[in-house]
Length: 115
Image 1 (tube, rainbow, N blue to C red):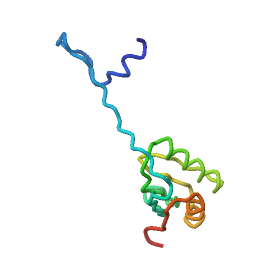
Image 2: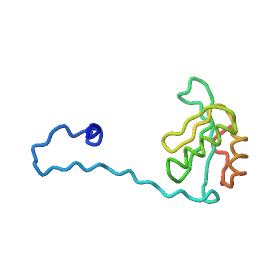
Image 3: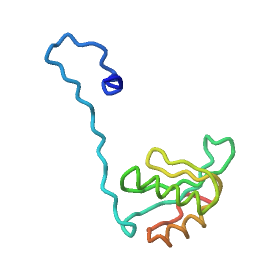
Image 4: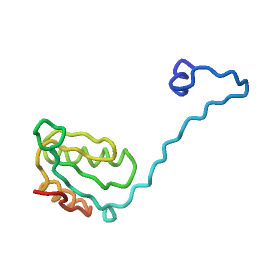
């Protein structure tokens, strides 16, 4: 009961005696098999103080599977990165290496964007 307030964020008080707080359930997508994923690998320099990052988009699946793929890419490239908003962000310009890794893992991946 001590953590109950976290479940009802946004509702402070209700005068309705029959009020029940309904928490929104986030819909999880079933993860497509690797060979059905169409991943795109970009280079992004915007809003990053001139630093380049490799951006992988197009993943269809659960957040856990996306995080697992992000961890694999970060480990194989030997750099840092993050997974957020359905995208994997890898520090540095590793497009070619990332595409090679994704193809070796059975994903459909292609270079997108300029340069």
